[in-house]
Image (cartoon, rainbow over all chains, first blue to last red; front, side, top):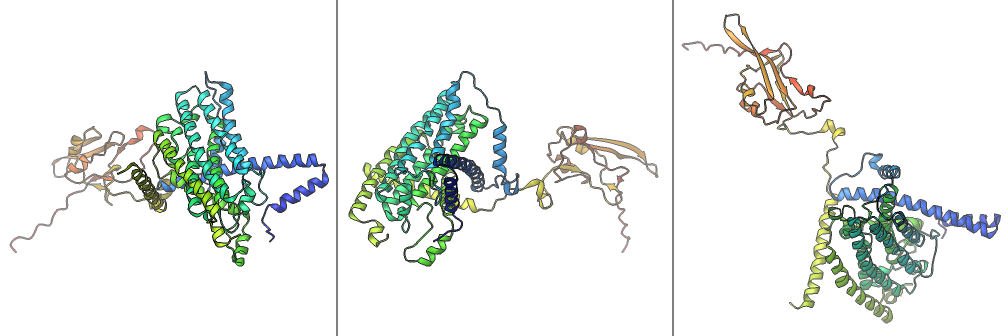
Length: 368
Length: 165
């Protein structure tokens, strides 16, 4: 079925015209630059929208209105904040490790930016489709922790140092759970490539396909992903009552903006990976056999489906953030090593058994 | 309880209590917000009548007030906020009488304790809830409460009941 609102028409037209007019090298170069620019722009815009949404939803959870002065319903608030942060001075800290101090924010931003390239936003809106996409995304998004550790170390400040150490302990622990939860689904789907993962979920999302095991993996992925973003009940690296702001205490201006941006984008990245792996990615809701229904659902463009599913997960993350009190470091590590990790290992085994014995929903009901 | 049963019961009570917490915040998300949007909602703003913001001396349509210049409010004021100057005049029938000259109240020093209003024997002053009292200089905080040319409301001479009826 043709879909008038998809970006595939635009991208394929661009590709053919460029290739017709220029030698392949130049055509590819221009396309690479365009993709990078579009991704960077999307990066900034998504961050601004997320900051606004977060502030508004947070306010509603806390029985207030949130930003409502700049623009209608405060819609321009995050734009104004961005301009403010860009205009602020970048403070140079005495007796800090100058080079590492300035390098640290780039690790954060580059890590989340590189992850961005691996995420399928919609049909034809997927910068790189590796055959080991899941592995790539996990690996690249973990680079951000180097930025956190460097920031803590180079600031020459006890708060930053403690915050960075906590963040390191937390990240290393929870990355394990997140990886295992994704591995569970890789076992189910039999592929690590995002495009194949998504196509395999056309009539039955992975969260339903592996029923009990998938749901456990989904919950564990959300918890550990939430912990990786240093938010919500797991924000002890930045516990403002103990550590002022944790690892980015000494940063100001644009560098602080980088950390701020990366924090929100990490939330988005976790939600979008969960969408892609568990909730069918950019595919519309489709039921096998209901062709009329499928046709109507297919009219909505794929990127809208992707962003809608991601938004639901982001809302869930905000909901958790404003419901639960902060954990202590020992409680945090207990949760990971005594609960999530053993459950996860058993869950992985259960999934293997489900797949081998043909007890997934696809096998049981003969869904393609 | 064995440690294994403890592990699992702890896990499930933990999950159920987290769910309970999330249901509470879910309800909170949808409760109507009661924040007053103050400068915009001046027209619909509701301030309690009991709110004490400004001391006033009510004058009636004849520009008459009820203050007899007795000075009890000034005596009762804990921080000397009220300063009354009175004059002696001689009435038409030759009696000497103290009348109010100037009733000066310093908003900047007032603690809004209400003692002046409570102790006033003739109910001449009261606190209003008009709370927008900000001014740019401290001298403007010192207000004269009795209006220009106002005078004491004469007690209505009760018409004497006809005797012997």
